[in-house]
Amino acid sequence: DSYRIEVFRNGLMDSEYHYEVVEVEKEVPDATFSLENIYQNEKYKFSICYPDDWKCGGNESDAGLEVDFIPAYDNINVIIHMRVLKEGHFPSEENYSNFSDQLLNGLVASNDTPEVEKSESTGEVGDVIYRQINYHYPGEDKDGWDVDLIFINRSNMLYLFLKVSDIYYQEFADKVYKKMLGSLSFD
Image (cartoon, rainbow, N blue to C red):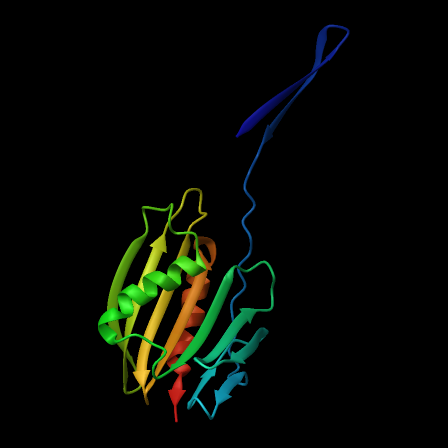
């Protein structure tokens, strides 16, 4: 948006100034992996690397384990989450899609966003096959979000690897998510 300011003195235009409002781009840092930050859990039989300068914290419940991986910078709207659900606390494979829809409603306000794109695919990490469900909402004026859920059924547990980011940080979040997924190993 451009603006013009005219300054009058004694009824005569004395000076004129032109201004333009520009959006300042936030700088997105690159996540570094020295491979020294490793979250390992013997009870739930997995380990995963996470970026340097990120925080990690977990809680255990009757249903299983939840671990959050959060950037140290408060201004980065990204969270990566690992949930391990014990047998009896997770859906069958044919219900993963409905289960992820329910999870999405708890994560982001998707009820009033009809433009949400949902896609499903499969992949492999090591010798483990996974199912991935992605939700993408482009939003207006870059205010959208992107959510990925990866389902891995192993050892009578469901490993749910989740990424939530706003559109601005999606590329950054995707890189971190893929690198962490590549480091995921099971005992």
